[in-house]
Length: 297
Image 1 (tube, rainbow, N blue to C red):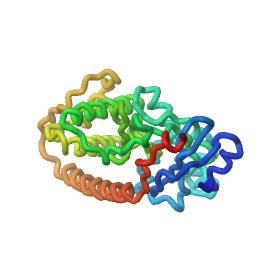
Image 2: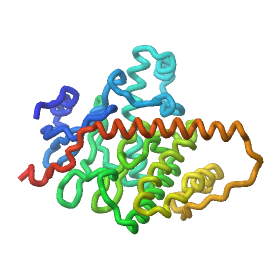
Image 3: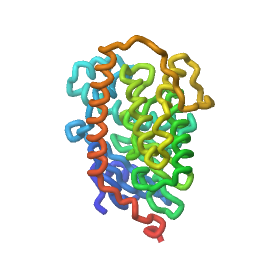
Image 4: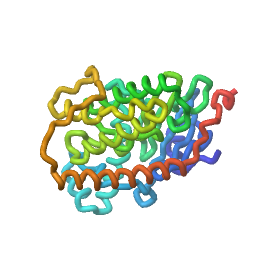
């Protein structure tokens, strides 16, 4: 296929030898299947801020630090240079998170670097060479749902131990290969210790995964992993080896009407956000049925 303009510099530099096909086009980025030597990978091309319709971006940027004071001031003022630097921070956030999470034992696509807004990374496939399907596209037996849910909660806990919250985790941002779930799409990852929205973002991530697996194993719907994790995290007692139970005992206290109303408002906002993200995810073009093994014969 014709080489996209943003990928051409990577071809010129010898990082990419061939663009085979467009895998999907979403609101934040377009993903292409590319050949790098004898290896098939994917290239995620981030869209410019003016073309991107990611919701509530400010909530995700909170807490992201820039060491260079000039860049930080420009970003705060919103100047042209500042917006350019903000884009670089946004784009580098995903590759930084991928490296950190891989080191923490979380299954994510292996990154190979981000070059001028193009992230080169592993193409996750199934055992037959097909692009691995999203979690949303697979049917799961109850016993496997319980196992995979436990695996996912372990990944979320390891992410939190590494100081990262996905921020947009759902059945649309998880691939499934022969070894189980693989977490993808992390440009909006937030700093758990510096973002004031961290706790409810963690709760939303966990709830999305709980609701999905709960379709196949209803007993999962009563679990409280987010509250358990966050309580341990705040006390400094959460570790990658912590055996989570999914149980959490609320302390009895007098009703706080303001807090209750805030929770209701937050729940409504989260549901609107979830519906928007589901709609956006469904608009992407997914060519997961293409068999790259056959294509290369």
